[in-house]
Length: 247
Image (cartoon, rainbow, N blue to C red; front, top):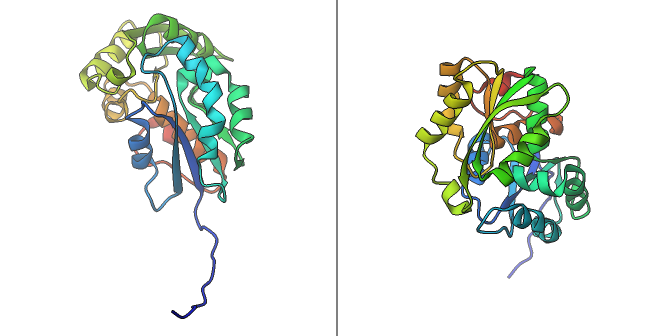
């Protein structure tokens, strides 16, 4: 066998990473749609999560986040790393999530769906927000409280009361649409947020925006949008959604 010379070349596109819950069946597929392979180098790791979603199981992810980060390719320098859990970020805390992720990898930015949703509300000028959550009230209410931030206030919210994470990925599109219609029905809101990275929302947003004549965005769309903004490399998620037109 003969040794043959070779060259190393730097990556010519942004490098992103996603920390998904091991129970989440939606966010990774959504991200691969929003970030086509040619637009970014994309890596995924998984963090253990409870089969039942409660404030306690969400908070326990703090223990396992560092190990999940360590399973990302260690030689990569990331433009952005995202923790894919809206409710988990709410329970653990935005600053603590950023600290845990930054301690385990080299990244220019840490993103999460809660902060991304807040930023989306600011970019879209949403003062009165409608909220749809798949979870039971003791998980949904803290997210609602956390979204009441700055000039934005959650003025109407509904939840499906689901505790089993496996069921969240199977909530029908029709159910999500009807829930969004319910929060918008009486007016008085400027936009609708469909919370949870495991809830299938990407395929209903365009039609809802047209029907309700309001901005509508989910956790995954907001998170992808926020990651693209912080890269500083002209990265743009794919899709017709109103949020993607926001500066």
